[in-house]
Amino acid sequence: MASAPMAEDSSFSDQDLIRQIKKGKSEAFSILVRRYQNRVFSLVHRIVHIPEETEDIAQEIFVTLYRSLEQFRGDCAFSTWLYRITVNHCKNRLKYLQRRNFHRAQDIEESSEKTFQASVSMALADPEQQMIGRQLESIIHRELRALDDDYRIILVLRDIEQITYDEISEITNLPLGTVKSRLHRARSTLKERMEPFLK
Image 1 (cartoon, helix red, strand yellow):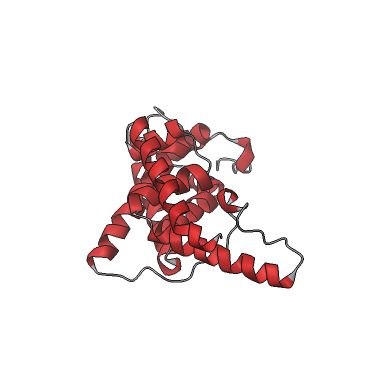
Image 2 (cartoon, rainbow, N blue to C red):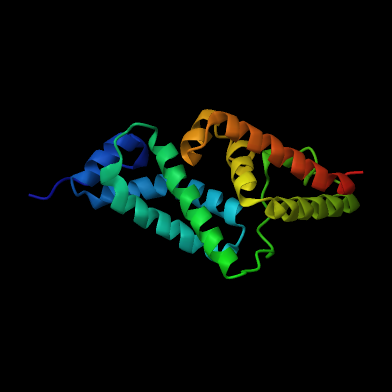
């Protein structure tokens, strides 16, 4: 007799889904993918900043996730573990592209990032001010891309994804002090690079 189909996403915790996946229920993995695919895609997009690479990397991440689930023991939140896989894939791809001297200065989609809302307001009524806002947002994206990968990853995790310092430490396998010092350096560098455009 066939087993009943699983209920929709919100009916199960991550741990429930992982247990079902380990028992061979592929539908549980589909639910897990739906639950996290937007967050993974967003994180990859913001770290790598290469639109044509984002989808491929995200797919690789979920393949790795499926193959590695047996290793997940619940020592940290599942989301932390998935973010760790995501960050590692992004770093590996960036190293690969840098070895090939891949040019990473492509345009990226416009997105609202809370950290920079004070500088970039797309809600201004004046068309001229709207144009200035769009230009500033483009500059912010360009300067964010220019940051060293290690600094950009920390900045994206903390200021854009709003992940706690402790979780970032787990995701990156870095001491808490290193996370905080890199974030401080990333913020300072980005602020310095933005100053000429904010006068």
